[in-house]
Length: 159
Image (cartoon, rainbow, N blue to C red; front, side, top):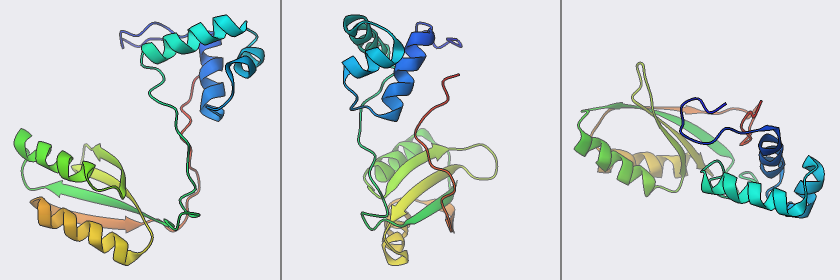
């Protein structure tokens, strides 16, 4: 199932390995090999191939935002004031430098860009908002505050 990506197709072993790593990237190769029924060396080679092919971008620790005091999630919808490459590059640079912005998307439809922001308070969000409107010409900015996180996952479907 390569879907025109130019990447080698994934077989059942690759998918099982990726599922193990998505569940816990700290699992030793021996543990993954045992779970997917491969030898240690064959499993290690497959993991290296998956990394080299770009299926595995990096291995990270997922932090507890609430435990860190970042209880507030804000979705920020932006309508652009212009659509030039220069303007977009400037917006990208500004947003990359705002650590509270944890996700950033270019959209279709009524909204041009969508940001996901994690902050401790409305005042902290307002500082992000003020910085954004100070540094970039925008047509409209609309913020929606999440009341409850119902589902959160970083795991991608592998079936």
